[in-house]
Length: 204
Ligand code: FES
Ligand code: FES
Image (cartoon, rainbow, N blue to C red):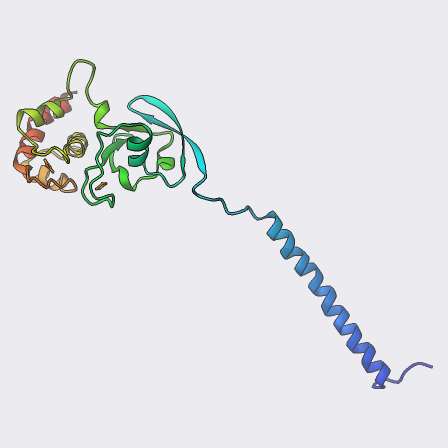
């Protein structure tokens, strides 16, 4: 005999049905979540080495490095090019300045991975076989350094400053070289060096 609506058996069946329906709705959601979790890429340990090719001073260098390595550390620690200096390691002193695709950058804040495929030029790559770069010669001619620690960064920045067209007056040179700090305060001589080298660099 069929149960009457509202009878005990009927109420139980309704609860059982609702529980079953809720359960069957949950199963696909749970299964979906599990499938998503399984297909999500596992978080990669950033300290594991990655392969990168850095082109430095016209030469390709294949390196296996921590993904967090900066251009400065790649140059100094892996390639043993110690001309670029680590002053602050915070992008504030300019001692680490190099050129990447002819643009000056603070290499302590630039990831090596981000520089792959670009041309990195360091102080070691400026001179030709038998001749200093005009900016290097001008720094010597004008005694534009004392301790010399800031000098590689100053020279790289000065080359870019001239090529950018920002060496037309002493004031302009000071302004566009202001990211390069000299603790020995050789600024007047640095400005004189940039003025001396500028015409030759512009001439090419
Ligand atoms: S070491 Fe890079 S800006 Fe100071
Ligand atoms: S020459 Fe010494 S910091 Fe510039």
